[in-house]
Length: 508
Image (cartoon, rainbow, N blue to C red; front, top):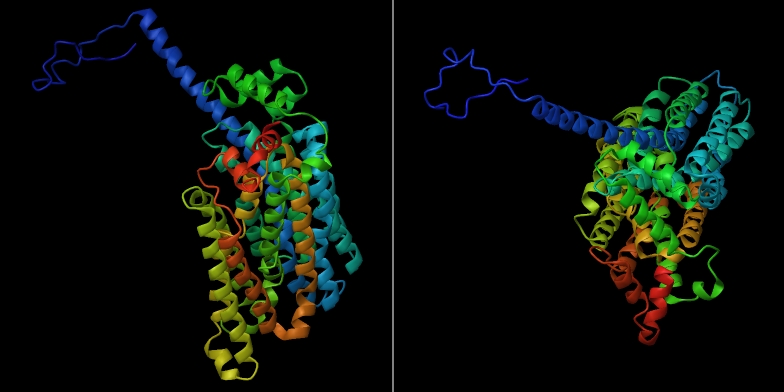
């Protein structure tokens, strides 16, 4: 029942006081129709909220990954400066603690895809909580460097799994309108976890900081335990009825569950099962994009990003009179969060090549200036004191430039330029190569500093990043607005007679 105006009421002369008792009763049928419609809208919004909560629960695993990445900077600072720390790590110990994470992520990244296909995305992520928690607990009870390294190897494996399966799950449970947003949210939540670790890490000991990571992982386990499996994986197992039910539960009437599940089923049927053959790997639509993606991952890591994040506290020691290293590291973490969350809104509006070129240019400039600061400071104490703000400012520029280009676009391009048939196999190998590059950079950072000093190290990374600018201009294709067939033909353009085979590799 509602209050309404009479259809013949004169709006201009309407006096609420005179008409306060004018009530028009709606029929029971009309009232029920409107009530049911309102309730259906509320139910649909409720279902959509379930989708977001399911994605958020999975992304809590990405936050745990961020905690493991951000852990090393405050932990090393506490180990070296706290009097009652159980041990004091050497410079070589520090490099192994930092590089243990990418070592562990190598098998995690390779095994994540097959595990996700075999036992499901949900079970893979739930089981992945075990190496996370065991790794954190090993570090909490650690009495020596070896135990810390073992813990980081374990949750490094878990990070490799998260990097592959979490985006996969988020994409497969989302509607088309927010698929890109949820699928690219991994880096943002990783940055949030890293920032929280840096903030908390400078107020608690390194032992209890590991418990914070265990706590976040446990919350993620509890939240994600009650979420559904990916509808796509359920359909792959042949249970269409259950998939439709799950999709309705996640999306309500926002999408036609039967139609969406039918599309997924047709898509799955169009792709043959089995491993990629050697003959397919030799095709230019497969090996060319794989090589480009691998080289981009090389530039992604050899910009020095991981080493700078891991050893940011040590870098800021040179300017500690200007600002306490812990506050500088916090500022850097906050910039990383904002930049990572903002980058997903920029990448779809700008060309990939433009962003990669601008990113490489700004990173080269920032690292060159940072190296110049350390070079002059070595012989000029007055210059060092007067310009102590340079490390913080240049690293802020570095983080922003990295976030908008070399951080996320190599991953995006890997999925865009790789044909569907080869995507799982080749993407796994590219991620594995990325982990190898990350290990090399992290492990050799201190040794490189000893060999060519801090300024030489930053100039070394700057020179490689400068080379990435030429590679982007001369080799990397622009994929914005192009479909998969156009991209495949780009890589197959030198063999026009084999254009049909490129489409076969692409779609079969």
